[in-house]
Length: 155
Image (cartoon, rainbow, N blue to C red; front, side):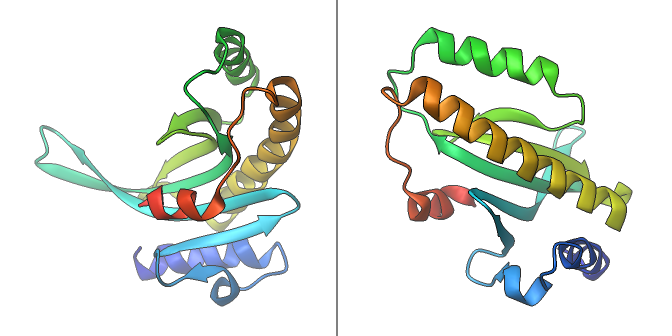
């Protein structure tokens, strides 16, 4: 993460009453905020484009809802797709490394403090709302969430 991006993310974090230093995870090289039952991770990713010749830095905002097991009913996936079609702020549910996440990616050159804060707020809102709803609907099909496993698989 470049210095300008760090400053922007830390300014957005300060709007939650926290400091960047409080949220920075040195080991895993990401910011980690906890708001209610929602966890938010903010990191950067190099995205290769143009046949892997050019790269762009992307800021990734993600919040894990829960681990998905292999026996999830088809109705779960239909509901996830239905929810995604109702969300209109750019964030979406996605499945990554066995976890259901709320996620949005922004190309680094377009980020501002206001946009970072809005995306953090949106991700935390949807994550908190949807983890309760989906966990209730599919509690018999879910694996126990192991937070430390998620962090190890984050990078």
